[in-house]
Every structure is written in structure tokens, then in C-alpha cells.
Image 1 (cartoon, rainbow, N blue to C red):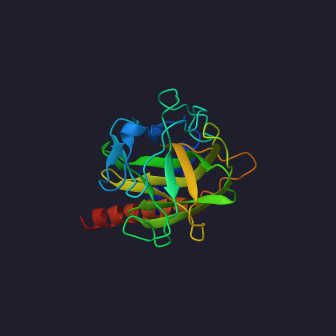
Image 2: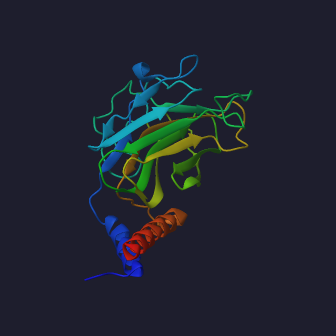
Image 3: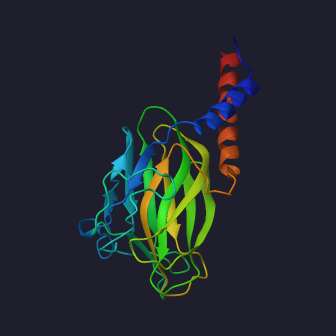
Length: 255
């Protein structure tokens, strides 16, 4: 049975929707930010993900702020996903830190924030579904009304996912749990995507926020009481799939 290009798009939509109901799998997870994984000036380093699905390469970059030693988030899960980290967390795993500096330089944003950039490349040989981002976050002790900004970089460009918070100024062991929909973005084979964590513009100089237990998953569960809007990324994914179907149909007719 031959399908029209509209049928192909419809099937793509159903496939993406169906992925929500599948069992959750971590595509790339980061939970160790200890001393031997420190990164920062004068010699920026790249450190690899602690947990990846076969065929996925994941790494983290942070040119301006070293990781923090000590506790980190000790609940043993990525955000509020209920997915356990690959190894039970222990004291000393540490956390990634984002700081707002008084002087802007090549390693900060235009507003002085350092950057935590989590990247992954799809080497599986097929497209994969990116549904949810999960992470733990807290403000440095004594700081209130602090947020973390997240941007999603794909072949389609940069999509701001929003600012999350206010973050609780908790003890290092007790970060808040967060989840963000990635709109079932369909990641092509050999594509690289990145999730960039920064302090939002307007954050006071000296702001320090802690990030831990970061994972990208093929499923998404929104927080209780918060609907999963799917956001613009889902529409972009469907449009991209539709364009691909149209291109293939056109080529087959020409042939």
C-alpha cells in the first residue's frame, strides 16, 4: 500500500506520540562532577558522559567554572524522572556550577554567566527520539530567587527552553528535581545536539547555582499538575519529517 506524503506525516506524528508511552531509557547521563572531572581555565577540558546508550557519544564542556567537590545531589535519580543514575551517588561525586562573573570574557555569556554545555552525537545508524531532559538544581546556600536558563541547540537552530526556578537554596545533598520536554525531537544519525545551562540575563553578579544528575531520555513525564505542551520542538520535528517525506516523494516521481 502506497502512502501519500500526508499519510507519511501522520504516521510520523503517531510514532512520535507513541514514543511517550514506551519505557524510559537514558540516552546520555551525567552525574559525576568530582575532582578528577574538573574543568576550567587555564586549560578547558572536555569530560565524557557517565552513562550512554550504545551508539551515543556524550560529553560536557565548561570553560569558565570548575566543578564543585563534595556532595552533589544524593537522591539517586535524574531529576523527577524516577530513573536511577547508573551508579549509586556517593559523597564526593560533586556537582557542576554556574557562576555570574563581574567581567565578561570569551568564556562567559554576554551577561557574565559561565556555561555548562551538555552535548551528544547520534552514532547509532538511525534516528532517535529525544523526549525529556531531567536534572537536579539548587542555588548556592543563602541565595534566593535564582534561576537556570536552558537552550537546546539542534540542526534546526537554537530553541530557548526557558528559565527554571526559583531554585531552592538547599543543602548540597537535597537539590530540586526538574524535567523539561524536548518535544520528541527526532535526532538524525550523525547529528550532534547540545543543551546549554546558564544563569539568565539579570542574575546578580556572584550568583552560583548547582547542577547535577543531568540526563536526556527517550520519554518524558511532566511534573504533576503541569501539562506536557510538547512546545514548538514537536511541531518542528513533525514539519522536518514532513519535508523529508515530500522530498523523497518528489525524487521518486522524478525517477
